[in-house]
Length: 208
Ligand code: SF4
Image (cartoon, rainbow, N blue to C red):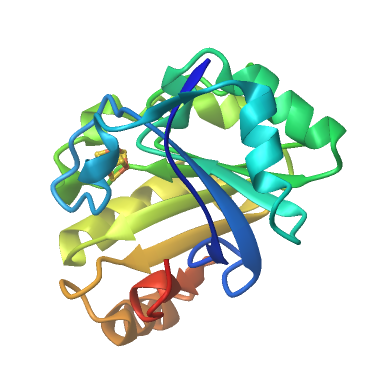
């Protein structure tokens, strides 16, 4: 059984699939406590569901893209067979994970979006850089940037690890209401940083 905080159908707000319809399976619990977390409601509350019950629930929606998210979805051991079954049922599966847990057991067909933590989250010491060895070419790395020092830190990590060539896309996202996406975009432009500016689209949509 998995503990599921919520299942809903909406528009993808992040990643290179931003703007596309997507089903979200939000699993309960997180091992981190980021300063800017907007899903603290997923730390504890949830309903026990079997993989078959989850599958039945998502089949109500006319959509073949599903994101497994949290909290931190990799904390629950049954998330691995869940992702396998979603892949077997011909879903395009996205996994949003914090990068603090090893991703080596994730089905290779799952698109992993690793949200490595920047300093202003106060959780950057949890980043497991070993995860870079388990990336596929379709995977994405995201940095949520709250200020100039987060940006400088992200830039040095991108350069140090050659991230632009290790995955499909590196995404830089401004923390909503803390940093203007326009300012972040200007920093990226001036540095010709090989990343994609991401706007947290779901914050601008009046949707679930
Ligand atoms: S990893 Fe995600 S869910 Fe967990 S505290 Fe950080 S922002 Fe919130």
